[in-house]
Each structure stands twice: as C-alpha cells, then as structure tokens.
Length: 196
Image (tube, rainbow, N blue to C red; front, side, top):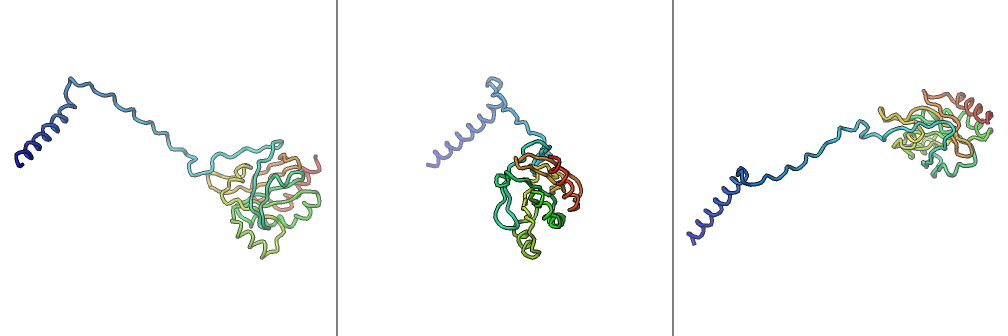
C-alpha cells in the first residue's frame, strides 16, 4: 500500500514536470494568443441623462407626462387642442410668481404649468399651504426638462426658461435664461398668441 502511494506521487511529479517543460518545448506548436479586448475611453456623459435636445419653434412638442401639485397626472396628449406654456426652473420658488399672471394667461386661452425638480409630495403640500391654483409639475429626474432642452447636464439642474406650445402641439417659442419675471412670461405669451 505504501509502495503504491509512493509510485503514485512519483507519477504526479513526473506529469507536473512534463507539463511545465511542455510550454518551452520548441517542437510543440504555440497556440495563438487571445486578442486583448479594447477598452473604450471613459464616457464624459456617464452618470448624466445624455444630450439635450435643441428644441426649436415649428417642431412638434415632445410627449410627456408628469405628476401635478393639484393631483393626478398631466399628459401632453390631454393638452392637445389648447395652448399651454411650460415655465421651467430648478425649484418651485422661482416658478410660483407666475400665479400672479395665471388668470391673464387663461384669459387669452393659455394654460400655464410650472416644471421643477421638487418631488410631487412636496409640491402638493405647497399647493395646499399656499392655496396655489397654478399646477406645478414634478420632474425629479430632469428627463422631461431634457426633452425640452431645459436641462443642464454639467450641473445636473433644470435650466430656467419657457416653452410655448399651440393647440396643434407645435412649439411656438423657446426661451432659456435666468429666472423670468411673471410679467415677462405674460408679455411673451401674448406676443406669440396674438401673432398667430
């Protein structure tokens, strides 16, 4: 028994040595080396939403749906047939002044909506506290804002601006810039609607 174990160990040692020498034996054909996978350069847009859309007047407005501070969901499909204006900003504080011109906007046939990053539960609490009739739409990921060209990938924030859309769902004006005064929003909307 002991002798069989010694023989077995010798066979294992010889096999191991032969294998080790086999890789340096010039008579053996060398297998082709496996190709080294090419690694792409790091994507500078990784961890962002991607490229902003350059929305221009005359184009169809992107389809969207967002939860509203007034309850329920606002869908672009439900707004067809009437004008609307989307006022974009990072937070509700910059948008709520639009409520001062809301009645004037509605009087000329335009529904106003604010679009911001705040969660819908915070927006609903605000609407209750301030008796706010202006519908604030929640875009927590910024994806809808990006569809309208109102997302800053570098800072991961919603840009300030407005988009005016007509009853056929066509974009009539796009303005980006610093937070707009409510009266400026009203004047721009009046200008676009009356010019049609």
